[in-house]
Every structure is written in structure tokens, then in C-alpha cells.
Image 1 (cartoon, one colour):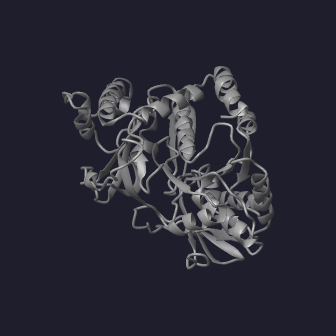
Image 2: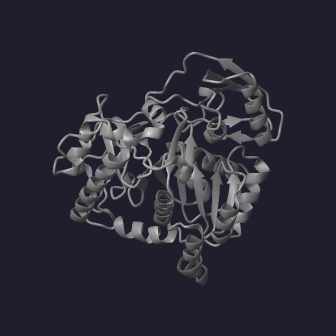
Image 3: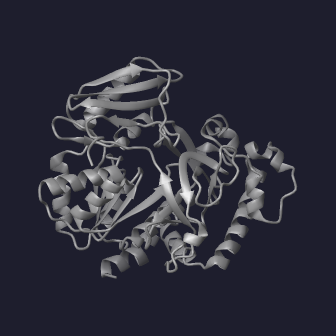
Length: 446
């Protein structure tokens, strides 16, 4: 570990936590230790934490207080107790927002996401939960070869960096690339920056990393990353192959959601380790009953540290498959359980005639702030325009569409034509999620 890495982890980050009232670096060390537990330790920890969490929820959340489970006798086994709680879906989350809270909303951090499902969800978290989520993401980066303080080329949808984020970017040597609309020049400049760094890492939305890799290959630019970590959307096989070949590194897929669930990540295996010390991931049938490992079902998840707004057995809209125990590799670095596959929607890209790319988050980053539109889907049939199909929600008016056009064109920095079509229904993909982007130009590409 270099002097910079040591200084950052031992001195600067603890001082930053003290100043901001957070506990990031303490949580990083804590996460590192918890994921190293053996089977017996994991089971004991999960029983203890889950039992305490369910008790806390029934005491402090009005929504759960009013359910029959609140007056029923609790089983000794915490996992059996969890099964008695109903599955929480997105419509219920929206309707019961205030009743779910255990503290006043003004004391909490609001997180809004249209997510990959196209449906807006709103949750509230406290600083403790934020610190845990950031710590888990750091440990996932470390699984890819990262050390705190090493340079990172990161793509994201927060082009306006707050003072706190600018400080983070400086101390963490982060080059933050706007994923709203990649221009060729921006990508090439970012890759030139990465070439000058020592053991840089790459992180961001899978589709966005794919764009970087395509442009690097197109311009025959040789850039080597220590490792690449993808999040936010599905890492398709051709995405992974292109990124690994272009940047001479391994790609590590992660699985999380904006609602604060950090569910699973790759390390030494082709499968993803589920983060059992922090979340309970269940795969269930249509009625909420667990399906056998190896069987595809709906993902429902419980975050044992989401105390400000408990979401128990929350159905996030994905289908997935757990790896059966008899298929576990004989040698693996961690005792955490394994997720075999997440069934994702077919995320495409939008390409303009000027050579710019937009990924799914180019649109969700705008629509998440527009509750007047309930659902949307972007369709592209040529390089010269797109059509946005939309289902209007409460308070919708025509000015909303002009606002969306202005936002997209501002991010693209060009007057790209955008057409709109109001519809009553948007057909979902096999996973149950609506497909946000349908590119009839790019979908045939390998």
C-alpha cells in the first residue's frame, strides 16, 4: 500500500467522516471482516441481526404494526419468522410511504429512482445506511483489485458534482465521466487520462463501459485497467467480452438497486456472492413462497440495516436463480451463498448520427424526477430521432414533454429530434420489467 493509500485510509477519511457525521471508513473495515466469516458464523450473525431488525420494524413502523404479523407469536428461527411477512411490492411502497417510515422524512436522505423497471420509487435512508452501502461498494471494488486511493475512471449520471463529491473525486483520484451522453471526444480524453495512471480501475454502468470499450477498440487505443466493475444495468456476454478485450482486464459484475440494496457481486467465481451479512435475498414464486435453488423466480430482498424505512421482502422486479448447493465449486474464497444468474431486461443503446451514445440511465436520470409520467419506453428506428412512448400520470401536461426534450438535448448538446407517443400500456420483458430502450438499429449487433 502506497503512502497515499495509507494516508487516505488512516487519516483523511476518518477526519472526513468526523466532519460529515458519517462512518464510511469504519464501515469498510467492518464489511471486510464480515464477508470473511465461515458458514457457522454467517448463520449465527444472520439469525441475530434479522431477529433484531424484525423486532425494530414491528416497534417503529406503522405499516408493519398494523399487519397481522405484529400480534402473532414470533418463531425462534428468524428466517421462518421472515417468511410470515408479506411481500412488499412497488405500488404498496408508494401508497404506504409515510407509514413505512420510522422517523420523520425531514431527518432522512431521500432517494428517488425510476430504476430499470421504469416505475418511480422513493425511499428514505439515514447516514448509517449510506455509509454501509458505500462501504460494500468499496469492498466490491477491492475484489476487482482496487485499493482505496488508487485512480478510478468512473461513469455516472451525476454530472453536477457537489462539494462533497468533488472532494471525494480529488482524494480518490476519480475521473468522473458523464454517462448521460458520451461524446467521442470525452471518452477519448478520459481514456488518455487512464493511460497515464498507475493501475487504474474502471467502474460504472455496464452499457456505459461497453461504449468506452467500443470506442477504444475503434480508435485502436491501448488502455489497461487493473479491473472493471459494472453496476446499474445488465452485463451481457458481449458487453463483458468487448470490455475485457479492449482493456485487458477482468470485468466483475455486481447486483444492487437504488433503493439501497447491495445484493451480490463477483469475486473469484463466475457466480455472484450474495451479501448475507447485510441482506436476505429470496427467490420466490408468484405467491411469495420460496422456490428450490436452481429454479427461476422473483427476487425479494430484505435489507437488515434499512432501519429508517424498513422494506421487508421487497419485490424489486427481477427474476433470478440461486446456485444449488451441490453445484458450488469445491474451492471458493468466501463462504457467502452464490447467485447463479440474474435475468435482466435487454438493455440497448441509443446512438445519434453525430456519433454520441445514450445508455438507459441517460433517460432514467431524467424521468426519476418527473412523477407526472408513470412509465416510458424509448424507441429508435434510425440515427436521426427517437420516439418516447409514455403513460401519463397525475398532474401531467404537455409542458412536461418539452422539459424532457430540453433536458435530453442539453445533455447531448445538440438539437436531436425527439417524438412522443402517449400509450395505455408498455409491454414488459420476460423478467416482468418494461423494456426502457428498444433500439432497432443496435439490437442486431453481436
